[in-house]
Length: 163
Image (cartoon, rainbow, N blue to C red; front, side):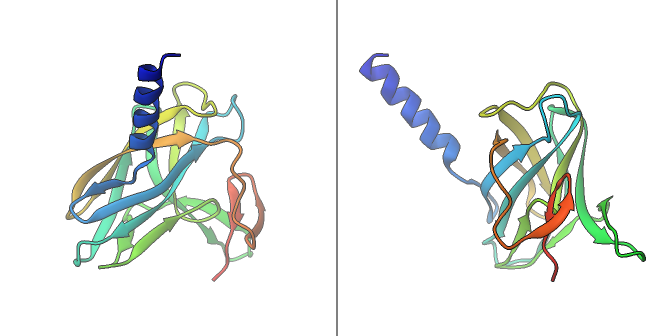
């Protein structure tokens, strides 16, 4: 690889590693994963920060990577079993606050993946906010990332952090 090609590749990698910004909304540390290359579902995880000084709400997500994209979380049912549920109303994003989207908690769910998620692939994702509008994010597939230390649970979609 030539020096010029190396510089261009390094610049592109640095650009893609930067957080997404729009109307005071910042998206950091975004990654996606599926349970296996044969899986038809996957999830995206990230930290969404609101630097805009006004509360907002994440109300939707879309991507060409899957037939359907929804906002999901885990909730304990009456029998003490954690279940993944679609959150139609979305997630509050307080002024100067954040939404932590993590395995076993809030996340973006991809259903009907159009192709397998492969390590290092990039997925285009649009996050839709009530006030800020659409925020485009490129999410890297990271099949090797492990859940954060201290989390617990035994669900296939990650671990659950109890409050």
